[in-house]
Length: 86
Image (cartoon, rainbow, N blue to C red; front, side, top):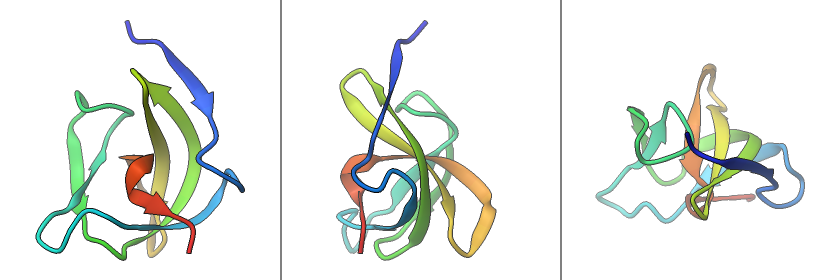
């Protein structure tokens, strides 16, 4: 069993964010849950617009639940280290 705590990804907690820092030849992994052990839903290139929802801390890493701005039915978790508020 893992221990998770709700946390804020910055202010405001909910809103538009953009993938940044994955690199020109890399993709940020959108995962089914908050942690590296969850399956990869898809890869997101830098510049992908997201809607940020709740964030959780999992083993010292902050993960945010997001949905794609252009396809809100696609949801998952990304590391908060790779998203920013434009």
